[in-house]
Structures are given as C-alpha cells and as structure tokens.
Image 1 (spheres, helix red, strand yellow):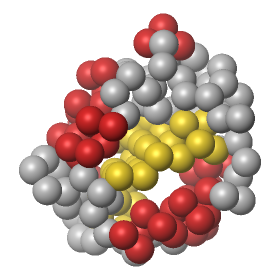
Image 2 (cartoon, rainbow, N blue to C red; image 1 turned 45 degrees about the horizontal axis):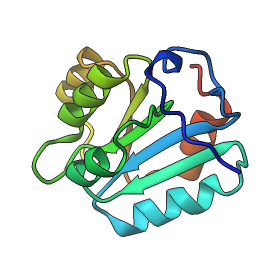
Image 3 (tube, rainbow, N blue to C red; image 1 turned 90 degrees about the vertical axis):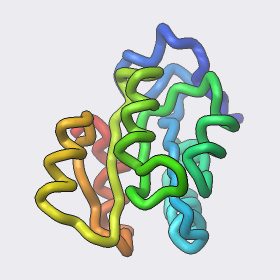
Length: 139
C-alpha cells in the first residue's frame, strides 16, 4: 500500500520518505509524456507518482502532499513550470525540482537554477534521464 506523505514536518527528511516511497509529481500538458513517465515509473516499485495536465490541477488535487521530486514542464497553461516550482518550493522547501522543456536555452536554465531547480531536461524526455533521476534522487 502506498501512503501519501502529508505532514509538513517530514518534508525535510531524507529520501525515501517515511512512507517508504518516493513521492514524484509530474505536471505536463502532453498526455504522451504523462503516460510515458507513469509507465516508466512502474519499473520502480518505490516510486509513488501523481501525474497532472496543468499547474492548477496539480495544486488543487495534491493539496497537503509533500512531494520528494517534482518533474514540471515549462510550457503550462496559466503559470509556467518555473513559477509552479516556486509555489511548490514555498509549500515544501525540501522538494527537489526538475524542469522539462522542448526548447532548452541558457537563459531558461539560469532562471530555473535561480528558482531552485536542480536540472533542466530536454523534451522529448528520455527514459535514461528519468531512470538516473529516480535511481539517485539525492543528486
């Protein structure tokens, strides 16, 4: 049974979370990307993944959940992935943020790092990049 981590005081603990699972949030409007990440994470039984199509949906439906890792697309409706990451970081300072984009630029990478992102991945997302992230979440 996968248990959601909801207590704010445990958000700053080391991975894996006290539930025994790593909580992964994926926000991407592209259905194929969401489905691919969900399928790829099924190979990692210690990963509990939530996938959402929009920032609004993610913020509404995951209220109270402390994610360990957040993989966010840059091009979201309403707010971009960097802004969503800042909102998540305000609620959960321990969350590790990763950005995906179809157009990686130096400016975007600098902005992402300035806002607490650990890396920017080019889309289409490669399974190897996700496997490296999931196998070594503390990097």
